[in-house]
Length: 117
Length: 112
Image (tube, rainbow over all chains, first blue to last red; front, side, top):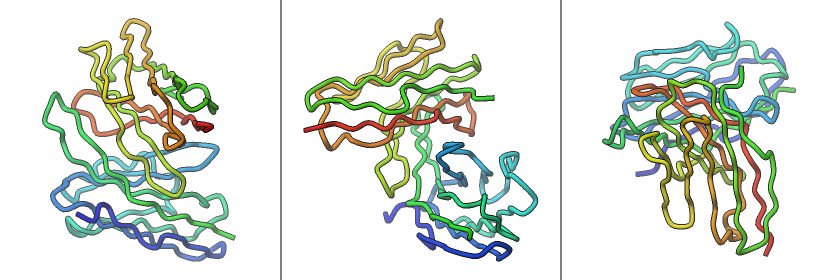
């Protein structure tokens, strides 16, 4: 399995532009998560999906952020309009249950490093 | 509110030494405590995890110690190797939960 796939790996854009980050989860995983990582705030959960349905988007910082999961193999995180403070590494992760007592493993993608100028 | 506090922020250890990273949590509903390892330019990867029904779990050179009454857990890396140089994150989640709360991370450097 190729693992969680994210694209692009790097994105540089100017303030005000629309940014779309893409994720392909591991086949068979029914949970998908979007995280943001910064030096100041660490790893933050933005939103997660279960069976393609958004379950909790309480971590989405503003209405400028939106996420979709049109099918089990694809998700997008969109920022419109982008701002310099959105600069961060964005990770997508999918999850498989480990089969004992509710334990699970989240597999993270390699991340998209976003720079908004 | 930072629900999982991790310390130290950084750690330097000699090859062969022991690295110790500590985490404390506030939410008594947390029931699952994984540790993730992250190398530069990569996403975090699950290293080892524990549930509160045991006080210790060991996998190779990595050991989690868990103290439920103190609401603390720690990662010990025995015989640290330069290849262990990475950032380590503790995390916590509720039983049947779906939201990992991560600590702030500890950057470990193992000197040869």
